Image (cartoon, rainbow, N blue to C red; front, side, top):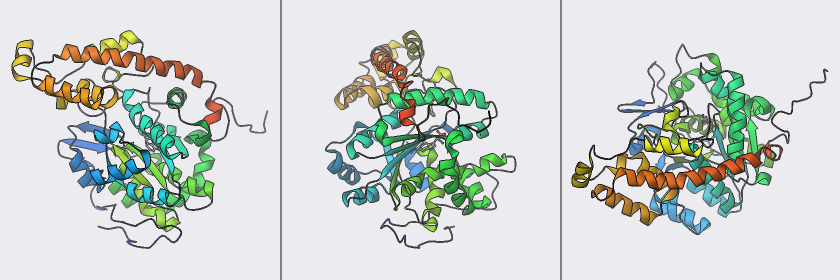
Length: 416
Ligand code: TRP
């Protein structure tokens, strides 16, 4: 069912409107985000994900060659994450680029739920975000949803979340975002920047819409139900900062799309441009399909892992190889389902190297031990470099925080 207000044109900008983004299924108590064989919600990603089905289900658009060429017009090259379809889907990316060409600069907005340590999978969208910041010379809002992680994880208390928030901020800074053009928002610390916008958003979303989009049920705590506008608010903050309707582009993994669906649906009712998105896939875990997860440490390579730990994890990883060397030589491996292949493809191999690796693996000329060895060789210095930058980041936090304060610097209450 289309949402109520289908086509009010947005007066203050020429962003297009396509408001069929929310299917409300008011009577159903079942989770609408469950598709057979795999499940993708902002809080759960499991199974063998069929990304073209997700595009259909979520109603997003594939990033096709025409759009890639259009991006190239601005960047002068095609980023490997576009070439290899790690970023594969979007909403209104073309519109944002057209606006940019007309001189209407966008803001980037991305975020992190600080429920654990940062692993290689988290860095990928951030590296791409940094690339976009550099190429387009634009501002970035980086939100840490510590409130979300508190509300949605029964086993996490605020003390643990605060520790992860701090550690995650070091990772974010170590990516190399431009401090003059980047502002970090930690929800529980900086809610005053978001609160006025989030109540505007909240007022326009009914419980039945929230239920249909996020799969809330009678047993969801009411904090969860009230949270989505807090993640929506940064989409409109740039318009407040700039004092004019300002486009926003969100690089994020596609599991976050439900948030943008509801935010887009209310945007024009509130007088803001609809936020645009560029969606990534998930990076595979080391032992299973689905996404690499901080809550299963053996499936993730953390930025704080010591070299020996990285090596052990990679050695123990699941691959697409055959059970014996003889069979591998005879039948070849299955690179498509192999996390080692994909890690190397996404982060370390050139296009040519990756193609050769694929052919050698599937043709039976390459053994898993060799790929694991390559991966260990590449991952160790990569993580080492991040660790050096993380150490330096401790002194840079103030430069990045939206209020210009250090992480542990408390607000003055006036009471002593
Ligand atoms: N909800 C996200 C998570 O759990 C964090 C987040 C907040 C985010 N705002 C965002 C992610 C914007 C991407 C883009 O990880």
